[in-house]
Length: 309
Image (cartoon, helix red, strand yellow):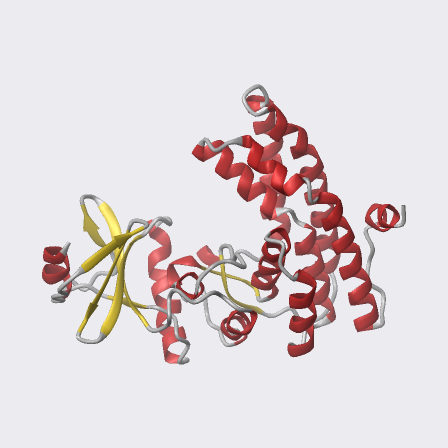
């Protein structure tokens, strides 16, 4: 690997550490990571443009480094890699303030359509159709997983309906650089990694952060309260926020991991056992938003009724 870094980047580190398929090293008091690019190759030019704009705005994102052939991608054994310079403590844990700082300070960055992810209705409907068709195929191998799937597909349908209605409202809903997925246990390495970026409603990241905090048994409600106290969130954004909390990405992500990586389907029990508790959380969020905005917040009737039982 030292020879690769020397030839393609004129870098001569003394040591290179290999962790999680990535190569970390230091050279002339600068820190770097050489990471495989696992997204479609068509994304890389867009990501590079976003990265340059975020760097110019003095955000501490990892900076993508062009190689000596003036290319973003460097192939090693036919695997595409990207070199990035690091500016943060990569081992520190993500926090709400830094997450909001990235979202709020990347509003208005121009982005090509290939990275757009804000048509949630179409994306979620497609996902539901896929899961419904797959359940019939894998039911024998994963009976327990498929038993739970119908509940979460139904919850996703509620989220789709909710977001459809919210999208019709004439109000501001800001779009910014976001992440494919954020977990409350993620590190700053993940938060500031441009290879994870997409373009979406700015509330996307915080919704996923709160959901993961809940299922990691952290203070999700405290994060919610802090977020709305320290950010001006429009009425439309609040409804989109609630719609995304309804959407069970936590289930579908784990479902994919189990099926595609041959993990034990028993892992789904960790989520399923908290379903009633999460329903109560969703009801409390609804009450929180109703009080905060002092105007009509659409309810999901069955959630409210169930919380009163």
